[in-house]
Amino acid sequence: MILKLIRSFLAVLVVLPSLFPACCGLAPKVTVTGYGSSIFPESFMPSRGVIKVLAVPVSFSDYSFEEDPVPYLTDVFSGGGSQYAPSLSEYFTEASYGSLSIQPVIADTVALPSSRSSYSRKPEKLIDDVLSAAVSKQGLTLSDFDSNGDGTLDGLYLIWAGPNEGYYSSWWPNSDTFYYDFRSNGIRVGSYSFLSYSMLKQDSPIQQFTAIHETGHQLGLPDLYKSGSQSGTGTDCMMDLSSGDEDPFSKMILGWLTPQQADESGWYRIKSESTDGDALLVAPEGWDGNLLSSYYLVEYVTADNNQKKQPVGSSGSVRIWRVNAATSAFTDDISRNMYKYSNDGSSSPQLLTAADKDKVWYGQGDSQSGLVLSDSSSDLLIYISRLDGHTADIYVSRNGTMPAGQPANSPLDGNEADSSGLGQTENEGSSKETEQSGAVDQDRTADGNDPGDTSAAAAEDGSQGSGTQEEESTGPENTEGSYVQEADGGSFSDSGAGTDASDITGPDTNQSGAEESSSKGQASKKTIPAAVFIVGFLIVCAILLKDPKKKKKKRRSSNRRKH
Image (tube, rainbow, N blue to C red; front, side, top):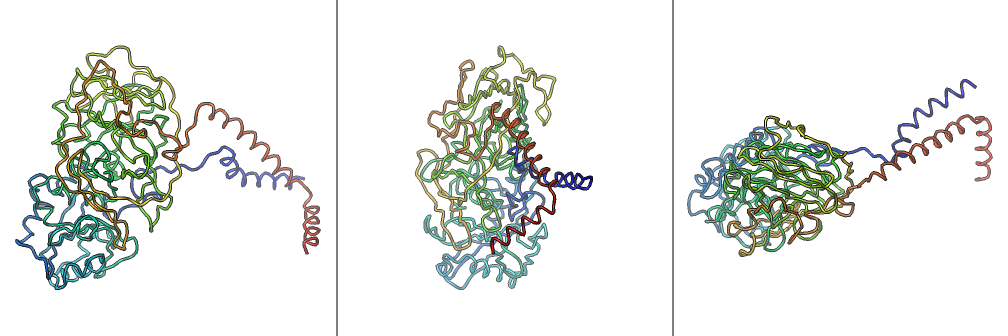
């Protein structure tokens, strides 16, 4: 009898860990804090540290450069920049707050003896011929461009001579990735960018930012513009229409920005995202720590660093982003860094957009504070108080009520909030958990465009036989899509005028794969799983306490009947 009890106890210990989570409806949560997890693999170009990238100008038998391209490319990549854009190296140092230092090397021009058309739709052949010539004739050592020692080039740019042939051709700026093990001259080539020298030289901000935009793709970032002739986010960011800084969501994924979490009602103080890499993450139903989920990002933007040309005023402005992030179902070596949602207009909701595209910038002074967002699917309210050019005071309400009166100065004066969001003056209710799961496979689409109502220059999402090709947009600089919000005594509301419904609503299971739990559902989860566990425990004990000889006889009898 004692032996039977011991066997039963040991069996329960084995069964319990797997039985109880299943009964409770719990599943292991995947928390994504940046690249490198099993669900979101690291890009070939490292997002942190000091890296060396190789840029090679390429001429052909039928197209050559009218000038030596090296001096201008040196400015574009690591010198003083171009007429409109900072250098690529300077841009990413500021975007990453010093976390990423890109050191480009501009090789001498490689003159290929074949025509340019002979390389159309043959990126492997073009890359191999260019690198072979650079190694044999210029003495380049390709392993010098592998800073992390993973056997793969950190970054590669081929800048070709000759005119552009249109969006659907090979001769249009694009980035791509070899997901198979493609090697040239003893080193693996992962991500690469093809750039047009003539476009980099044109008198256009978007075109002069092309190299920076394409570097975002090598880092693993998707396009954020829409198919057609309009912005996908409704505001300026580099992966949309090649202007402004990288968006805060991209910076989080790359490990450059860690936001505060507004888990409770109260006051929060955020520093300038432009200089300090701060932001406020607000999930309507609570946040489980997964960056690949559904939430708002509140950033305070000042006219510094990569945001110098933003219309934010001397006190800065607040901008609110709506994130609907999830990966495709197959995030592995074959299909990596693919998001379930995109901004190309082919699916809803959008991956990333301004919470209200008609009201991008909020509160440019003390007199312009007030309610800036009211989430239609929950009681979430976001309220702006003081902006002083360095910090912004934000009040988050989770029960639909705002603080009594508008203080002349922020209640956070002399009480600096830390990175965990401390400093709230009240707690109006506990936050709700939101579990994020599920995704379907979807390729990144890259259809270029120009902002607002300016002339369109759509780009294609074509394939060159090696992966998903990111075609880029050209055209006039974006001067639309940015608006100064006028205060009306706290009557701002993110009503969604002129916006997709997904831009302002909270997460739901149809949009982001999020499983929302109400207080009623949470109560049932506490009672039903316990009963199921007890029943399961009794069944296991009853089975194991039976006479093993009788069980053995039954098995024999059963076997005989089968045969």
